[in-house]
Image (cartoon, rainbow, N blue to C red; front, top):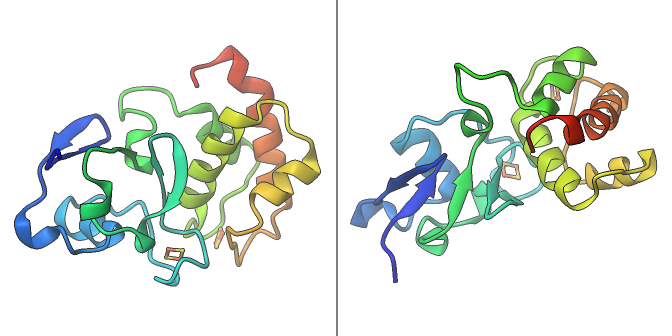
Length: 159
Ligand code: FES
Ligand code: FES
């Protein structure tokens, strides 16, 4: 079994003592990738969502050992600093779907995974996809607008 994970395109071998950490703490504390947030720590809020092999997964509910050999993308890896924003990120900016920003990385990555499997969603489908991601600020309307816009733009842009 491999003893490394791929994080934002980079192969990383966690130390022996890090294998029992939860993935969220490992990303934030060991790798200094602080985009994923700790909102609840018990799998309820979605603020810690990352992509694992393209699926939206709650990092607070995984151990590092359980994701060895997997491909992880955090919000920091969605678009390179010298590249345009990913279309979902751009749509969140365009639609004013960010207030405090605490939920935003999880929302964006949840949307990326959702649009990959549902490229032309209806608004009710978008709302259902966000059911388990909590936002205390926006009332969700602008977030749904943003994902709807991203769905229109994605075929023209990178996935
Ligand atoms: S911090 Fe992981 S779901 Fe809330
Ligand atoms: S923008 Fe503040 S929690 Fe969603």
